Image (cartoon, rainbow, N blue to C red; front, top):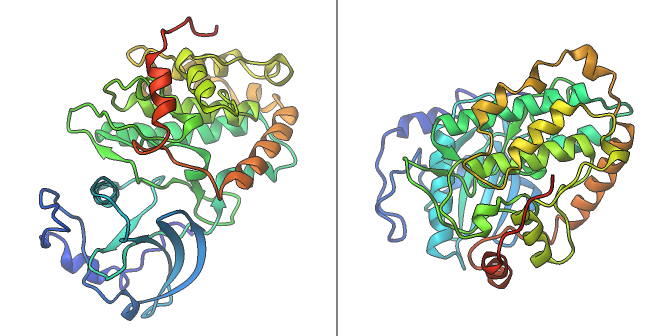
Length: 359
């Protein structure tokens, strides 16, 4: 499918480029991307719900002039605090600056509707990447590396532009179409920030993928994405999360201590180079953690296809299928961490004395 943008569908957006809107709900310091006036229903026919959360849902949207299908993120205005509104503004602003084949396209933003904000985005017809992987009959380290190479290059692009995503996880890895060679795209920039050379302090992320420096209330930068990406690479190869516990306080302690293992029953057929890359990404010391640029030069990416093609991940695929089924089951109730959630668990981890990470 590629980009679902049509020339006609984007003509209104192009005409508004550079237009400075009025201040939005008291937030006047932000420079907005392309804005649209109200009455979204005049241009789009809203259709089926693709996904939903506490304050937002994603629906199909058909552009009436051309019949082109898009996705529209519909965010309820009622109940949103200033921090969440600012996050939304940042998401739209960041995405409008991105021009990368593996970053989801955003086209228009409707801030002036009565009850909702609307963000018109590329429709990712192929669904989630992990759904495609678990449907495979045969899965090899070569295939896993091909996915990881795309993810590393995409994250490097963000970091080269001083953007941190802050919520990398399987849910946000989508496919443009149902084709076998569909493009992978990174989505959901709800916590993304343009750093402008500064460090961040906001507590946010998704529990199993969150970097230890965030848990420790330390100022952080783009390296938090490399931790999350290390978790994703671990799952792609091993089939399960590196850090897991039903008790969130214990989970956060494991993350803070870097307490994970390469269990032989699932990792014995996986190359040492792959494990070394994961160790580099899951270094609890953010200063020593691999950067995206360094990861792109890692020896694992240079191992021949013939060597990795013979590393069948049958056991990992079984675990990955189980992981994905559980992930989908939890999807309706999964909570994305913000400063308003789980303060007790955050503080319990931050107050503990550190212990040595697992080897």
